[in-house]
Structures are given as structure tokens and as C-alpha cells.
Image 1 (cartoon, rainbow, N blue to C red):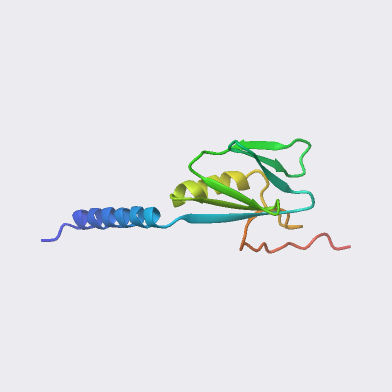
Image 2: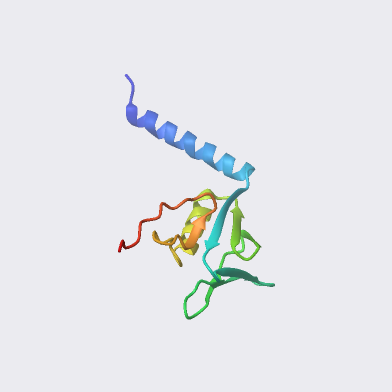
Length: 124
């Protein structure tokens, strides 16, 4: 007689072990893009702090953990790399929450390959 609870438990543990091996062998990278006039990000030298200019009246300073490797290209593209996909994706979503993409002009922090379907404005 088959016990389906044991089978589900085995497949779950096998998939978790497989996921751990993939994360150890591969370096995972998520790319974010700042879209908007004057939206920039800077990495403060010799520290783990990102400095965002996102069109607010104040600048945003964000301290990130040392186990992430962050590189910035042209001041508006952020590469976040590390070993754990869950940690990197949650970190990218926290950064993205500072300026979510808005549907009328498409400004905000986007994933690099993300496309926003823009809404139509007011018709006169």
C-alpha cells in the first residue's frame, strides 16, 4: 500500500535539495532599471549604502547586506547578484517598492526586461 503523504514529503525534500545545489553552483543576478528624468542611484564608496534620487523632495539612503554584490551601470541600472534566489528577489522587491512603476507614464523602478502596458490619459 502506498502512503501518499510520504511520497509528497520525499518529493518536497528532493526538490529543496536540488534547489540548494543549483543556488550553490550558480550565481543569480537580478537587474533593475530606473526609468524617469533625474532618477539615479549611487553606491557610496567603502560602505554598503545605496543613494537613490527618485524625484522626491528627499534622497533615499539604503543599507544593504554584505552578502549581496551590487554593481551600478550608467547610474540607472542596478545589478544585484548573490547565491540565494529568494533573498535577492525579496531585496529587489524592497528596492522596487521605493518607486513602483506607474501606468500612465511608465516611470519608476522596473525589472530590466519588464514592459508596462500604458493606460490612455484623459481624452478631451
